[in-house]
Image (cartoon, helix red, strand yellow):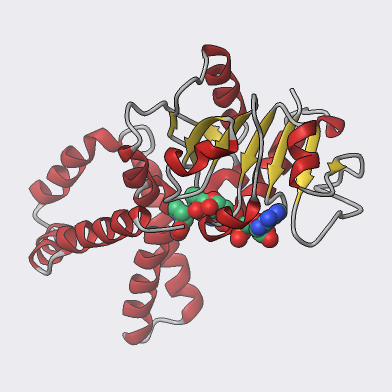
Length: 257
Ligand SMILES: NC(=O)C1=CN([C@@H]2O[C@H](COP(=O)(O)OP(=O)(O)OC[C@H]3O[C@@H](n4cnc5c(N)ncnc54)[C@H](O)[C@@H]3O)[C@@H](O)[C@H]2O)C=CC1
Ligand SMILES: O=C(O)[C@@H]1CCC=N1
């Protein structure tokens, strides 16, 4: 299958392109478009195909990935009848994508695509076939896992949650580092201590996130330092902060583009 990526050297487009090639996709079947022009080397592959414009990319591709920013959609002027378009754009609905004439899927990956760990839920527009669904699942499998959603409104919620990737863990890390630094711990030790929580401690939840309540209960039952911290975090509005963040992100997703 010939796969075209519009925005091929951007954050997500580049991650997808690199992982497609690493997974064995033929460079000659990868059609790329960016704004800065062809590169001699793309993830170590000189033989990828650089399109000279959006029409050339659409003509040469069976499946087109739209990995441009929402605000760039209107100017793109994509015309892709009979093609399958997979849009990564937050906020640009199927109704606004449909005039390009393609069968539309909206997928919501995240930055962990570059390490093959994106969870990329997606929703299909009218006319998307079973073969298209299989192609989308295959495409997204090179950057991680995926699920088909049952309604387009769910994509805004997925933009807010898995779409945020490392953002909230990074925010947590910054708060921890600042706490320790302000109390005289050196920067390097503070960073390692934050990593112990944000990356290594969190590994205990891998595959077990559904048991988070039990994990919290175990710490609360222990009645030690962490229990005191959990109570204080909750009293200070930890849950409300996360709810506010995800509500704001979802609202923003509804007004992008
Ligand atoms: N970065 C992230 O973590 C996530 C991004 N998304 C969505 O994915 C899309 C892409 O995001 P990023 O990769 O972060 O953006 P980015 O800004 O890193 O990449 C977008 C690329 O598209 C290129 N571009 C713009 N107009 C173009 C045109 N007419 N022809 C060819 N190339 C063009 C830009 O030059 C840029 O390199 C966005 O719509 C965003 O909403 C979704 C989930 C997570
Ligand atoms: O921050 C953003 O706008 C991108 C799109 C969805 C998630 N991340």
